[in-house]
Length: 319
Image: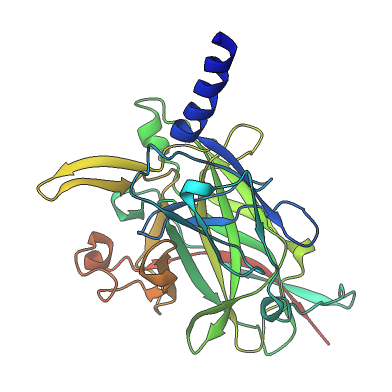
């Protein structure tokens, strides 16, 4: 009897306090790394590199459906009350047709450096959340075949603040690329995941080598985006941590997104508006230019800090 009660309590607690779930490719049973998990109400999270995530019914009693998606797969809905341990996504043919395989070029090229713009000021930096994505535009150089070999990613690890206390962190980011759709980020360009980790030991500029990914800029340019996945352990594995704080307001308890370190330094030094932002789990994932139309109350916008100065090292081929 005691054994039966113990087993029963185990299953009840698993349903109430957390269920480990894995997202897999339906055709080959492999993990769908870092899939997007939307709760359908402006909140959500990401799976880890093995497609794993934890869903807690007691924490999200008002959520009855999860919407799972990933680049190259069709979105699929799952009822929370009957979640199996394995969720399968089917590759979407229309997405896979967008993949353009480019063999490694071995001809002569010249390096072109696009300098990043950065600073270490706290009050002119963006505080990223797990729902935020920032995209900047890159054009083809001299009308010739151009590959992005390295991205220079401005970060602000708040070195001056760290002198006054312990501000250790370890955050996973994802780089994604989007086609240029009449001046705004369009369809995602399918490629292998580009994931990297930033800690308090990094500062000012993170140099990310992506030469092996063979990212060539189309004739009308592309957008490169930076997306927060969440905190990571020292080995770079995504940790399923709390991503929302519950704040009491006159309208009741509101779940507010947790901000993640490092900060992203925005700038007022670039001549043209080229930065777009979006919230992954809100507003149907629509991109918006970062100006007053996005948020008229934003202090960054009011001060004119409306661009993210990502730089790059380009390989411009002669033929």
